[in-house]
Length: 383
Image (cartoon, rainbow, N blue to C red; front, side, top):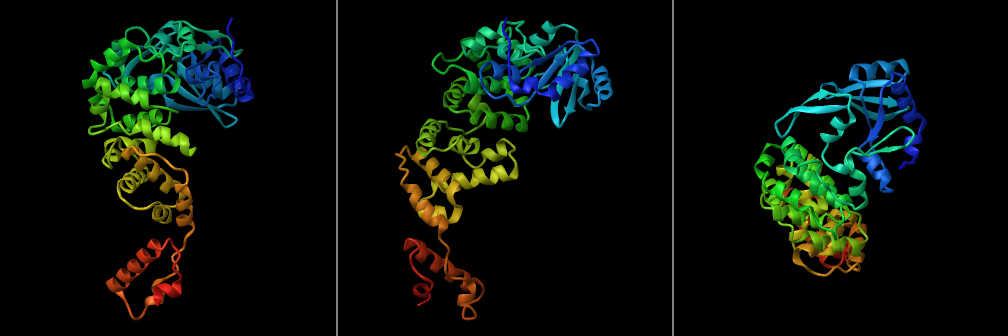
């Protein structure tokens, strides 16, 4: 009998939630990422619980136990229970009544089989009781052991229920799949036949999923498969993934952690931020990265203008786009630039110069100073 053991499952706050629900006579089962990741020896974050208790009953039992209940999605059977500051998303067993590729109309159920069958991939339909005992109604454990990302039932049926699952397939494969074993042929065929449905998805959902995909250790094989099936062109018009694999190799050489925006910049131009409805901060960084990478600004000046990490990211991206080698010694130049302070101020040139003339002179002096390797002193610049 399989059993999971982890700090999150024995946490008194989590066990308190389980006890409160069990007091109502219902089934209490962990499901999804927390179970999957624990079985794979990975860290678990979100705690999802499935139960045959309906939302109103869940809320009543929680309040009786002194646990805060937040009705985060009653129409879909979801209540968030907050115990000792820790959130637990509790959802009633469900089965789909109707779907349109974006949203589903659901009916509550008392059967775990119904709840499991409406999920996306087999290894996301593995459950665990509060004592850690694993329940595997659809054979997801075998796929998990083989690191095989497989749709539940017919891949085409699962995709038609929510077209975002096409993108989620590639994301899960990047994080959990066996790269050497490759991709499931049935899944790729179903995804390629369902491209039109991707147009129904909101840019926000696509953007969030894309950033999760690009955060994986090596998403390049998944993105290449997206290109082969037509998903890349459908979701990201103008995207080109040729620089992605070189960038990931350079990241390893530079000792840089995975960065989804850096990798997104490798796929396309500045319009990608608008395409994915990124936040203003994310879109601005993407714009800065791409422009700095394609310009001829030297490493030292990039360090001076962008500072350390941003300059390094732009230089790594430039190397990937130009298919050139990475040399860690370039970071010495970045560091020099990042630590440099322009020794001349506007006050030094006033009142002789004002307005546009003042700005032009400052810019000229700054350019001379940068060209000198930041070595010219204030006196030398003003002489």
